[in-house]
Structures are given as structure tokens and as C-alpha cells.
Length: 139
Image (cartoon, rainbow, N blue to C red; front, side):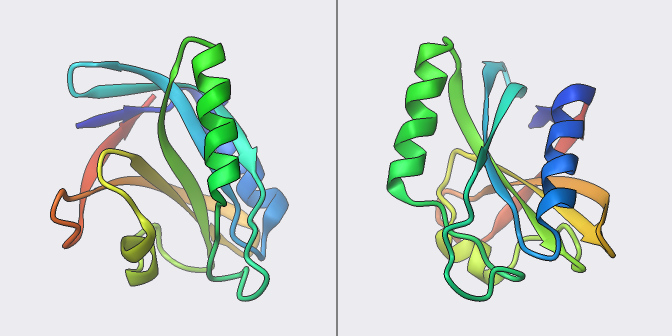
């Protein structure tokens, strides 16, 4: 499994993470699939709707997911996942991330240290929801 983030898309995700620091950012990934490769062509910045602990948690409402699905459909793309940042923490999913993720989607995480994005790693939730498997990130 590979997640292709072209340089302009990766730059958009990193800029969002930098802009929202020290809070977690979140956004939607729109693109296409070719075999076991997902090619992200567009990202949508979403609002982190958490009222508290925004430096450690994010929440995307069903209304935002529906809006992202509609935008994907209108562009002839698929909603393939959701990215978020981990301010001053590694780009590894937390237990909270596992509890709130859904199988199928890609979940890139951007580690942001001192306000600067340092690493992007992507994950997919196992079908039995027991944990994540890492997917390769390429440009």
C-alpha cells in the first residue's frame, strides 16, 4: 500500500500543520486509486471542532465529512482519508486515533516540532480495528 503525496499536496498539508500549531490540524484527502496506490490530488482544510485539548486531539463532524465527500464527487475524485498533525509528538497514531478511525481510509500524520513539520507517515486501520498498518508515503 502506497500513498502518493505530490510535492504541492505535501506542502499544503505541512503548511496547514504549521499554521495551526500548537493545535492539531485536520483535513481531507481527495484523489484516485490505482491498484494498491492512492494518489492524492487535492486536500481540504477542515476545522478542528474539538472544544478542548486541541493540542492533543481533533474532531471532524459528520457535516464536514459530508461536505468533503460532495467536493470529491463534484471533482470526480474519491474521499480517501484524513490527515492530522501531532504537535510535539511523533507521527504515530495514538489510542485516541485508533478509537476514532475507520477502516479503508488513509490517515497521514504530520509530526510538528516547535512549530515546524518534520515528518509525515501514513496509516490504515486494520479491518478488525485492532491497530494500524503503515503505508508507504511517496511523491
